[in-house]
Length: 194
Figure 1 (cartoon, rainbow, N blue to C red):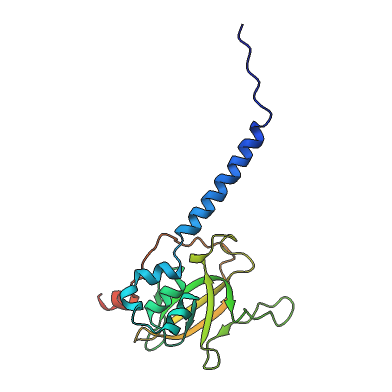
Figure 2 (cartoon, rainbow, N blue to C red; figure 1 turned 180 degrees about the vertical axis):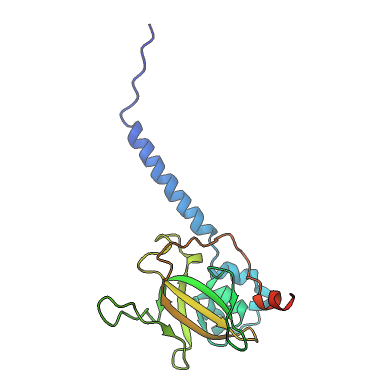
């Protein structure tokens, strides 16, 4: 007669362990595929080869400043969270928005209990900011209490004229498109072609 063969006692534990390795492998794969400043620098090497060493190092450290070009911001921070838009300013500014998890200078603390943190705005005294964007983060999950928004605005000459760091108004419910692998088209071009 046929009797069922008992399964080894280690099978459930082995399956659980294999599942953990599968998750770890997926995380490593995703982090390896996520675009980084170095990959974006290689992508735009014909332009980036013209930058001086200090500028190159600053952008690879994810630090942008007033006067940077669209290509410089893309190399440093990657794709904006949503498609770039034009502001109502005269002349209009092109606005890129990023979800960020770490900045230098640090995000300012709330002035009083229950009030939202203030925004941090670029100025001649604070022309640069370093930001770790969603393009370069696999963990922690998107959004959350440590997330902030960074808006970068470009003038008519496609150079940064202002940046603003402000509280995340999306409540962590953001689903960025990680598949974009090139600089976004300028909304100025599409608005003038109509």
